[in-house]
Image 1 (cartoon, rainbow, N blue to C red):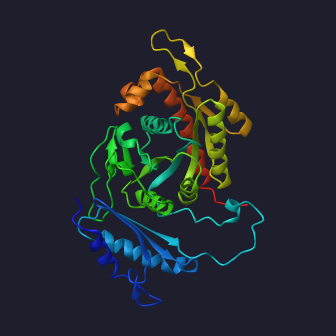
Image 2 (cartoon, rainbow, N blue to C red):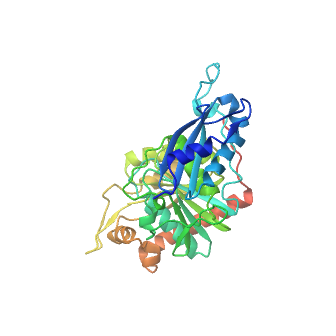
Image 3 (cartoon, helix red, strand yellow):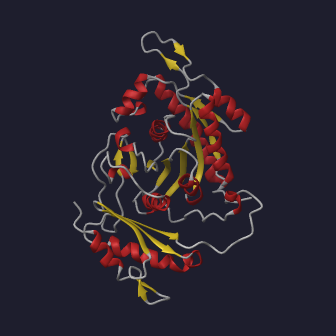
Length: 372
């Protein structure tokens, strides 16, 4: 139970003065969307689009003031526009391409050598299981690895990585990531009960994701794997623009409907100049645990064909197998629980290709975002 209340948070925020008017941000009605969930606090500052840059120091001061309250372990404070921007001429290109994205954050996990997104165009394709086993395989290759659960609405890394409890808060108010199997882990699932729905709007989600990068003591890492939310909505696009990604891995199943969504995810990363390392075909085929017979339940080879058509690498195919499902459900992923198995070897081969891609991306330098 939190040692503070919503009233305490508002009282703290009422000490923050908006410089132009000389009044506090609460009496001005700028504070909105205040949420207190245990030791975690979230709120928005609703400002005019023209004042966003000027109000950024105010946002930071408000965030720090709430963070200093006894019992607070994390604060998410984001700015949103409460008035329409002045009328503009209709764009000559698509809405996404015509907007200037925010710069990639140099303050987000600054000691991490490379951040790699594992993404899918839709849910239910085994993206999180793939992300976990990829992270563990990269660690087995000798790299220092962390994994961030960016799927705010459906966090699964605590269960997949066999972790429970809450992260410790350091004296500098940064969170210590949880750790298992030699890999550092952070997820919103550590901060809220497993059965609690995250009823947050887009700006709150993005603020939480940036905070899990900026305010977590990741320390020096070779690779931070980000288990991205499924789809290609605002959260996914903004995450791609704000986080200094070295590259992305797309996960899909073989059937046409999944590949259609995977193509959207791939094109989203290309739109913001994030290199796509390649496509993984998950649930590529079913191996009968009794006789070893292969059945192509969802078809087979569709992701390889799609990769060739789109001009990107095919990283490998992972079967639909009971052992992969059982080890994931038990929190002992197959790469660490059965390292000598054929399935673990598949993930290791994929990790070797991704590691080579990371080296190339880091040597080349992080790409700049150019929207056309």
